[in-house]
Amino acid sequence: MTGPVTRFRKLPLRSRLALLVAVAVAVAVAAVAVGSWLLTRTQLNEELNETLRNTRASNESVQSAMAYCESGGTGEPDYPAFAYTQLIGKTGNRCVAPGSTPVKVRASDVAVARGLAKTTLHDSVTDNGTPVRVHTIRQEYAPNEIVAVSVSRPLTEIETSLDRLALLLTGVAGVGVLGAGAAGLWVARAGLAPVDRLTGAVEHVARTEDLTVRIPVEGEDEIARLSRSFNSMTAALATSRDRQARLIADAGHELRTPLTSLRTNIELLARSEETGRQLPPGDRRALLASVKAQMTELAALIGDLQELSRPDASQTAPLTVLPLHETVRTALKRARLRGPELTFTTDLRPWYVRAEPTSLERALVNVLDNAVKFSPPKGTVEIRLADGVLTVRDHGPGIPADELPHVFERFWRSPSARALPGSGLGLSIVARTVQQAGGEVTLTPAPGGGTLATLRLPGASQPPPGEPGAG
Image 1 (cartoon, rainbow, N blue to C red):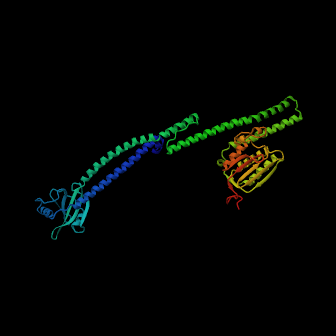
Image 2: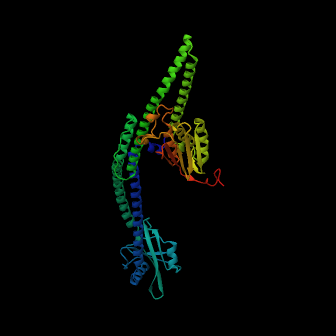
Image 3: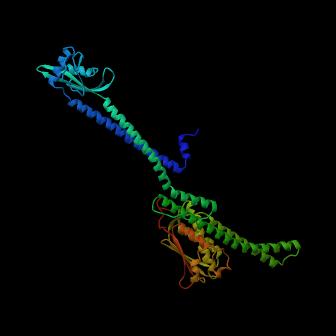
């Protein structure tokens, strides 16, 4: 069964906002109206009480009233014409002045007549049921002659005024609620206009996949912040899509060359087997070596593409504190295998960084591989780590100044290096990994020739307390 809350949630946002505004105003108007009515009633009752307290029959009026009662109701005593007046006896008997309406005697009135209380102020009713407010007081009208005089006024005077006030407040509240509903609709329409524009833009993007849509930003309110966030999101998505398209195009271009060469060599081997014409042993060995090299290059390219396609390491794996000097030694072991004829000099001082282990080691391997690739035969590669700055220098031909701005671009390869194995992705992986660790990497010409790779990674010479290796 659908409840009121569920039905309310199914309403459009504009209707819900208008309804909430109307309800809030209605509650506020009702609270003010009820508060005003209660305050007015209290004030009127207090004024009536004060009037009754100030109403005091004269001694002559009391004597005249007593004479009137003793004479059996003949004569015209002087009594307050605007109130009901009666005398209360100690036994609860009463003497009603002429022209007055009899009022029922209460126990508090009798207590005043007996001298147990000096005065009393209370509600009562006339004999015909009309509610009245009664003030009874002991009054000395002659030496040693004291009597209880009760003066009362009907409460219908107040009730009539309160009823009229209630009707007036009800009318005002009704007009206020209707006005609040109209104002709520206007506020909802005006306030949600930017949201309507944002909704239209989102629907357009979802329908057309056009990420160039931008929403005009006005002001500094929440809607403006939401519009800026949407514009930033679409810009980031557009950039990501462009990068993805460029990566796919570049990857397809880079994969085409080794795949074509690999296919050609395999077809030559297959045709030799099909025709029964064996290739010379030397050519066969050369073809197999070429196939093996191309497969190795293809595997390396696919591995690099997988690395670049991964989300940020900070989102996929927890960062841990690593001894950078030990990670460099591990990467150096792999680099020695690729350049066994080279000489590696090291000066590694302890330094601890926060990074993702696998990505950091792969980045360091790429830096060292780059140095190995461009080092001359029997050359030297110098590795130094001090105060968070890792430098790797080779003594190769170096990088021309006009090519330095492009070295960290994906698939970019120097014209002089296109004959060497590689995909052009290694330094891109290095740059991304170092940036994720909060550092920076640069390549500059080394003094005297060669290239100097510099990696700056934030960290400390001692591991934080509680981490492995902490003393």
